[in-house]
Image (tube, rainbow, N blue to C red; front, side, top):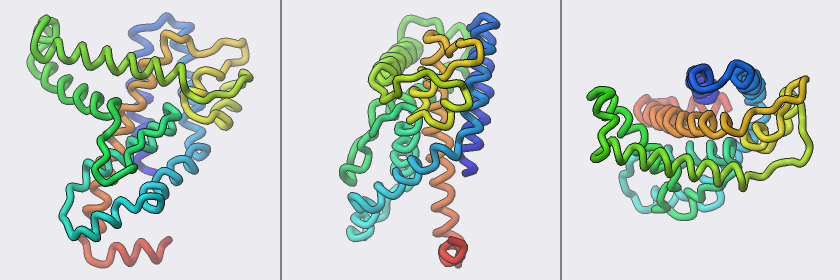
Length: 238
C-alpha cells in the first residue's frame, strides 16, 4: 500500500541519518543492509495488516456500534488506533487491544509517541539552547523519550521470535515481526544488527508508522464520504 511505501521511505532516511551519526562504520553497514532487506519483504507482512483491519470490523463491530448510536465521531483517533494496532503487530509483535470497546484508550506507546512528536516540534522551533533546559517541556521531552526507550526494550525482550539465525534475505521473509527479524538476521559473515543499534531504529519505525498510516486512512475515509459515487466505485473494483 501507499502508506507502507511512504513509511519505509521515511524510516530509511531516519535510520540512515541516525546510524551514520551514532555508529562506527562496520555497525552502520550491517544496519543499513539489514534495513534494505526489510523494505523488500513488505508483502510478507500484508496478511498481519489485513487481519488487524478485519478484526477491528468483524470481531467487536466497533464501527457498527458507532453507526447504531447515530453519532458523529472524529475519524482520526480511530484511524490512529487502527494504524498503530497494525504497526504494533508488525514491528513489535504486540496486540495493543485498541478495539476491545468503542472507548478503549490508545496504548501507552501510542500516547507517548504523540507527546514525543508534539514536544519535539515545539522545542526545535525555539532553538537548541532551549532543549538543554532542566525544566519545562525540555525536561518532559527527555522523560517521554526515556519511557519510550524503556517500553521498546521491554518489547524487544518479550517479542515472539524463532530460535535459529537466518541470513538477511531469508529472515526478512520468515520473521514473525521486525523485532524477530532484527534479532535473528545475520549477514554472510555472521554479523548481526548490534543490540545498541536495534532500539532506536525500531522506535523510528513505530512512530513513523503511527502518524503516516493514521493520516492516510483518515483522508481516505474523508474522500470516500465527501465525493459522490466513490464508495460504489471502490466496491466494484474490489
